[in-house]
Amino acid sequence: MKEIVIISGKGGTGKTSIIAAFASLVENKVLCDADVDAADLHLIMDPEIKEHHDFESGRTAIINHDKCTECGLCRDLCRWDAISEDFVVDSIECEGCGVSYYFCPEKAIDFPLNTCGEWYLSETRFGPMAHARLGIAEENSGKLVTLIRQEGKKLAEKNNLDLLLTDGPPGIGCPVIASMGGAAAVLIVTEPTVSGRHDMERVAELAAFFKIPAMMCVNKFDLNPSQGEAIEAFARERNVSVIGRVPFDPAFTKAMVQGKTIVEFDGQSEGCVAVKSIWETLAQRLEI
Amino acid sequence: MIISIASGKGGTGKTTVATNLAVSLESDVQVLDCDVEEPNSHLFIQPTIEEVKTITTPVPEVDMDKCTLCGKCAEICQFNAIVVICETVLPFHELCHSCGGCMEVCPEKAITETGRELGIIEKGHRNGLEFVHGKLRVGEAMSPPLIRKVREYTRPDILTIVDAPPGTSCPVIAAMTGADFVLLVTEPTPFGLHDLKLAVGAVKILGIPSGLVINRSDMGDDQVRVYAEQEGLPVLMEIPFDRRIAEAYSRGDMVVDVMPEWKEKFLELYHRIEKIAG
Image 1 (cartoon, rainbow over the protein chains, first blue to last red):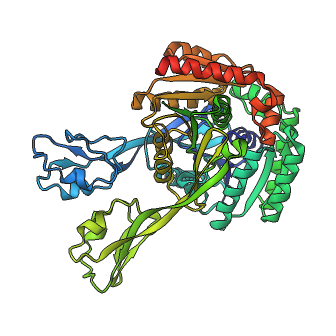
Image 2: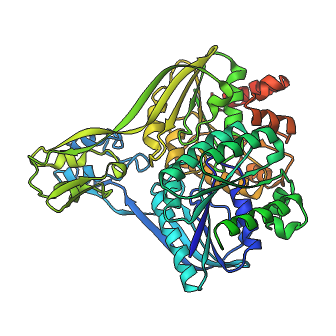
Image 3: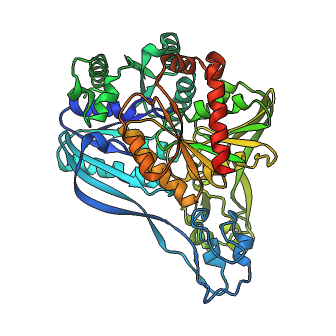
């Protein structure tokens, strides 16, 4: 079973639009939306939810004022200043480290497990899909990313499918790190801009750090072809396989507005033709 | 005043708005780029950097001569960042949240703290504009600790513009908390709207007044406008799709340098924010 994870470094380069197009083009696969912070793939895939689970992770301290003697030890120990002068824990600031709970001489602090998100196993017109949502302002996104990828793999095994396509998050932090481990390859979707290049450098370095093979395509290429070529040259220097270019195509947005993949919206569009070619190259390189 | 510029969805134009707004104001303004995973503001502002600081976070170091393998450190740790195994104690520095609990609980005082590098902070200026950004070390998982360090550079005497990361979880909260106003930048598409709703949810949890900039405003549909009206979220600026803006952006040019008529519009945006946030 091979997993391909689509990442970008920079946000908004077109990861979700491109993976949606792959969903249309590729048979016998499972989809996974691991961009748990701001999951959008379901807006195109229109999943029918078959299983719905709470995601419980991390804890938050709550002070019981019946027992609290306001000795102040918790406030002295808390490194996040999360406990106010009137001994109320700010649940947003609370890191969930448990130090206040552990050391309170009156055992006046509760430390319950948080439900901080949800995850789903669904069916779509393109096959099975595992997806998740982290609650607003929550932590532990890396853990939810790890979980949803595992569920994606289980779905693949259950359905005798050999391919998992995962929509990854932007950035290089814990959700991205959690999205890459064990992947057959990452596909970096970038754009021909100074920001795209800067951010691609960092995410390519991250992939190399974790020894994950990396491929790259440049979306909206015609916006600045010389910048696009520079990014491609840069990628090759760093052993990132350059597998294609997608032109700026308004059909992507029009398709999204209609809840369709670009393949469904207009199979003849320049964007669609380019994405098809990218998939063919990718599949060839990974022997899919 | 602190204005945090956030979005939910990535790539909507936060950095474009943050940098052009700051440069339009010219002086008595600072930009704190808190998108520490992928900071971009410096590519446009091109500040002269005056100061580079390496930022670390404390992580445990165990003196095995003093350690009795009692296991209390592993017991208190919520993050599996320190374990007792095979007659030794293994700290996993990359998992450590720096709470100090293991150090505090050790009955033998066998634990001291060393540093794990989070990244760097660079500070500089472009004429009268002060610039600070954080750059997360590649391989570092946690961005909020570095974001909080960048926020410490807030100057109370001038306007602070915070460029926030995309998303709605803990890094964005670290970039928005304590702001006087959150300016949400969106695009009028289903993805833009979906993620905007999440961002609005985060802003409401923090109880901060907010307003909207709609970027590429003539591409997509009208659902963002409908939502904004329902929510009572004021639309403070619209930027139509303009290939010249996209191309300038791709080169690292500032919109207000290439198309000077936009300076007036960004100043107007600031005045509208001032009216709401006071």
